[in-house]
Length: 189
Length: 196
Picture 1: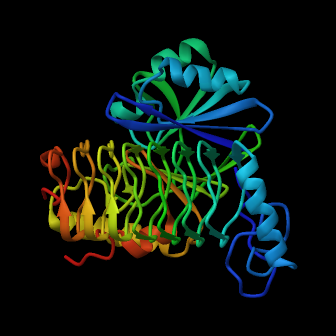
Picture 2: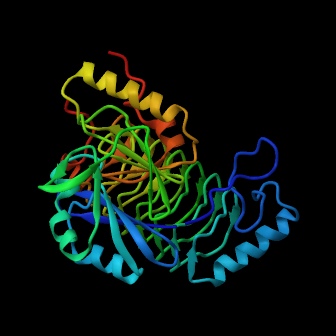
């Protein structure tokens, strides 16, 4: 399996492309923008986008869907009924998906938005805006921050330290680095 | 992507070395293997999907390399020159770097979290979207570099210069800084606190 990152200037967000080593049906996570760089990554690796996973329904994570669906006949998966007016398969936390042979575990660390989902594919955790390298998603007040950090802390506690964390904004991390250095986890209200 | 298999030695949590079933700490003929890999590293221009976790490298040149999706976590680098290299999507967490040069490098989406840097230079480099959280760095320089969207959260920085750097969206939240210079850099566009 191969994973590529494409940086989008729309919302300064990361979009992830995951597909088999020798090409074929692939997954895009949070296409904030469908730009020429992403198109080249897809085509040059002989991928065909069959599945679009959305961590939450905000434009930096969905803005490229309209163009993407003009090029590829792909299904959307999210916790919403529709994304930018396109129908989405509603998925719930603690479920699993088999997308063209790629196993996706759907998780929820409550936070950032009510519809936020986290996806685990093999040793990669795609956290959207819920968990970044050394940070958590923007919250309204200290009480919410404490609840969210508790939820995330409990969520990652059981995960293997070597799992790679791929957030929607900023650099990647590992579960161990988040446990060791994320100052926003384990906060108290 | 590099293998995520763990060493078959009981209670060892390190990654296996390339195609073997043990990590570099527990592999047979460890010194020979390191010597072989060290010479291969110098010969190859493209280092892709390599798993060299826990490697110890001393006094070699790794200039102008493409290091892509490779794992060098928990490793030790002494007197290594990475100048002119492109390091993409790679893992160097919990490693030790002593007298290393990363001048004129491009480093993107790479994880150095928990590493120690002593007398290292990252001069005139593009270090974008890279993770330096929890690092301990002393007597090192990032001068003339673009550090866009890189993070130094919870780091300990002593005698470090960030002179004439692009620090837009660079995150220094909860970092401990002693004798750190941001001269001629746009430090007002970096993050030092959380506005909450």
